[in-house]
Image (cartoon, rainbow, N blue to C red; front, side, top):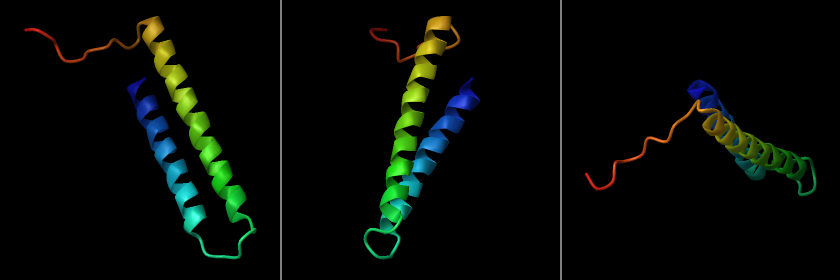
Length: 73
């Protein structure tokens, strides 16, 4: 389960990098770079929502337990 979360985080960062590269790519305004950037950012948002849903599902099924820092010890 943890490796899946790490892979999804890596995919989110890769989609963000792809959007940044599309934004910085030289070319005429109006070619395909705006569309590629929008698609990469939409993919990043979709992956982020999916990761959040996966975390909530794993927590509700007991696959993940919050560890946190002990308070007041």
